Image 1 (cartoon, rainbow, N blue to C red):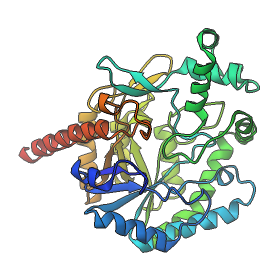
Image 2: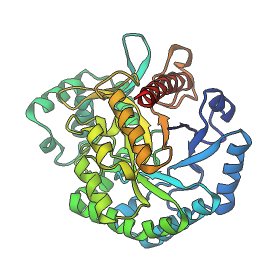
Image 3: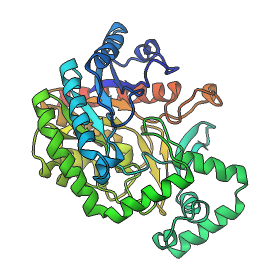
Image 4: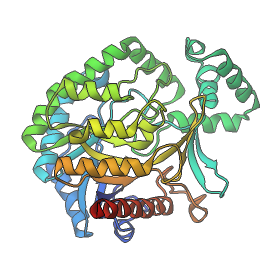
Amino acid sequence: MIETWRWFGPGDSITLEKIRQAGATGIVTSLHDVPTGEAWPLETIKSRKAMIEDAGMQWDVIESIPVHNDIKSRTGNYRELVENYKTSVRNAGAAGVTTVCYNFMPVVDWTRTNLTYQLPDKSYALRFEYSDFAAYDVFVMQRQGAENDYSSDMLNKAKARFDDMSDAEREMLEKNIIAGLPGGEGSYNREGIRDTIQQFIDLGEDGLRASLFEFLEAVIPVAEEAGVKMCIHPDDPPFSLFGLPRVVSTQQDARKILEAVPSPANGLTMCAGSYGARGDNDLIAMVNEFAERIYFVHLRNVKREDDGSFYEAAHLDGDNDMVGLVQALLKCESSLGCQIPMRPDHGHTLSDEQGKADLKPGYSYLGRLKGLAELRGLICAVSYMNAKH
């Protein structure tokens, strides 16, 4: 697999030099200064690509060209926004950046309730605590009908959590959930998010899936002409939040997406952490089924809990079978006849980086460096054993 690293552009405190020293050969990045919905200029893509190549690496994956919420809801000037998206894909292909990761999560991007969950070794992990989320949804945001989306047991836990929280803790919870995380499309305030949530609840799962398929029918032919592979990222977490519909959460969801537009340009991002947050997703079975349409991989691990909560474990720990997954992915590469870009995802924050003002949650240098080293060793060991047999 091609070892890549997510970089947040020239303003990222983790420089291209540091990334190269970590051993990565590829960069995963975006044009973060281009507002969501606007077309990416060809010259800007070329300039960013040249910057990466001057540092001795390749721009392997765009993560991401964000999909505007109006496209997902098919409202406003969404047709113009789709045309802008098609222009961005054409320009990416013309510049020689030919893999685009994107997601179709409405309103909120990847969501966690605790960005500094302390592990026994005193490092920090990202955590999704279901009772905290329910406490925010029902008692802080006070979304209409929210209490109907939770069991009585969860509502009791949520009420107890809410009552125990200080004002500062409630503010931090809100910031973590709706103020935007690295790589997301932006942030909301409490008032602004309610109406947008209701719009998508009214749209429903069938409506959101229809929006996705319409988007793919418009964009995938352009991607195919441009030599670009589109690879959709799963919902994170892969279940409903705020009552919102989810359409990229399960093996069946992925199958429907690939069958809707059966083009080699229409592919998947295998995010082990996102799909793996559901115990009913068999990651190895998914890789085996979709082997020829997996174009990008996020390797991270999670520790699941019975109520739907989870935290992000070390890359080789947790509930995902990382050894079996790597074995399946190496076979997947054989099916494709090429290497797949892989990046370590959401490293722990180790002591030396804790408290740094410019730290991006989940994107510490040392934590990802540790994860990349562990994954590199695993991949080398599995490759060696495969060669011997």
